[in-house]
Image (cartoon, rainbow, N blue to C red; front, side, top):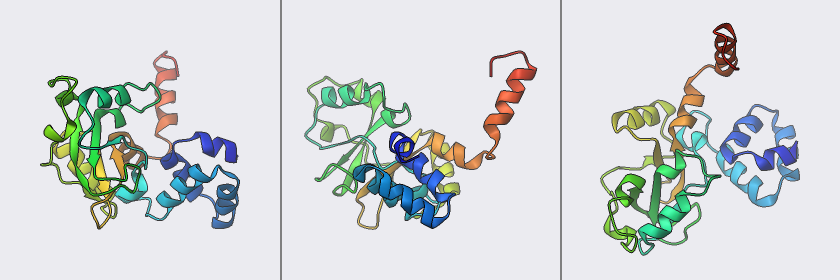
Amino acid sequence: AADILDAMEPDDAADLLGQLPESRSEQLLELMEPDEADDVRALLQYGPDTAGGLMTPEPIVLSADATVAEALALIRRHELHPALAASVFITLPPYETPTGRLLGTVHFQRMLRYPPHERLGAIIDDTLEPIPATASAAEVARLLATYDLVSLPVVDKARRLVGAVSIDDVLDYLLPDDWRSHDAESDARAGGVA
């Protein structure tokens, strides 16, 4: 079970462990790889209905001196979820969560409009306010819908980036637990592949 949890995205592993008794959850965390377990423990400190509980602690983070070419190379990685590849977060050091102070976001569409050697610091979107880790899932959903975004930066009280919450995380939270089985049943009735 711990090997499976290690292979899961940290936010999904935290969701699963959050449904288990605390003693069993801690036992599995002890069996996980230390780095993976640390990410999951960080997520478990937030309520499941908050931005912190919905976020992934592994967004793409770069310095203001990184170039468009470097950022595009990172978002091209095939293992990266498309919602997380939609933007890069620019912070002060350190560049792993929790990072230094969040400076802003650079969306991939904006990167495509600039030459590869352009510094990300010159094209930061600093108009989008990050969401506090304590914000409710409803507030996250409202902001994503209002600004037509696929992800939002999540910050702590010191404005350090602690993760990013994506539209798929919010949908998983808002939809009923058995929504996937309803989808498979509908496909089967319609003659589609489940």
